[in-house]
Amino acid sequence: MSNSLGTITPILVAQEALPILTDRFPFIQSFATDFSSQGVLFNQTVYSRLPQIQSAQDYDTTNGYVASAGTLTDVPVTINKHRHSSVAFNDQELSSTNLNLVQQFANSLAYEVGNDIMSGIATLFTTGNYSTSVSVSSGSLITRANGILAAKKSLDVNKVPESDRVFINSPQAEYELLQDESLVKLTWGANGVGANGLPEVHGFDFGTYTSLPTTSNLIAVVAQKAAVVVAARAPELPSEALNVPVPGKITNVVDPKTGFTIQVREFYDIAKGRMQVTYVWMYGCAVGSALSLVRITRAGG
Image (cartoon, rainbow, N blue to C red; front, side, top):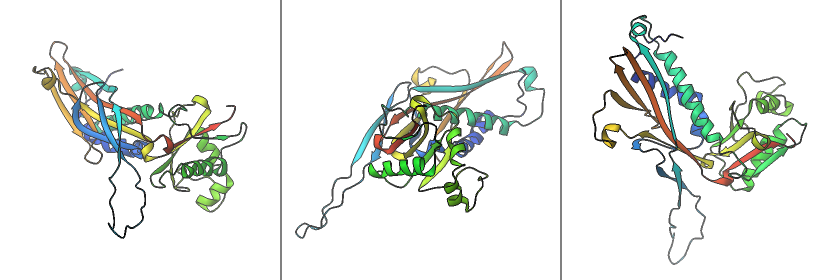
């Protein structure tokens, strides 16, 4: 299948893709993120910090308002995902069209990056990492009562902050929830199905991840921001790591809103008459607060 590049600018594609990424995959920002353009090596460990809730104290008539030390928990995150999206164009393809395909390439790149990072996050949703769960009876549909409220209760019992909570459905779980009459009446005021999925309910922002793992009969996940830490860095530049000239152009493109960085690598092969563009990103995911995530499963599959 022939490629078409036209007047496309690789760096502009990355700049266009980054805001699309956060809009199309909001779950990434639903968790604690540590994004930076700082260069790292593959399998290097970086440390992110999660603030802990302070305890209330009595006023001391002698010493007044005694300050306690702020508590931060270090979370080590290994940058063990070194990913890329590469495409090459020969001389004929480069000169065959005047179309500007920036938006099309940006959409594709955003989907590749977002889906890749979400898949890394989702691999953490195991019983070994998060022991709190609620179960929907075999043969029963997930509902507001046995799913949303049961999970909310579990987070509350675990003393998880009520802010920044998210409910991640599988497509099947969302389909079942949209059939719950009490939920539909609560959110839309009448029987029917919402046009754009579920709005905020009981403090949860809702969304669906189409590739949610089904291990241990998982059908949905609820979490607070501190449950997962996602760290991303830029690959270290070869010219700095190896102290040798690079036969091409390497540019780090940083999202000004999140700090997430995509590295753009471009080079031209004179002998083959071909230009290659490679988009590179590196990241890692780690368990943050294990009590801040509840797995929703269906008993018996």
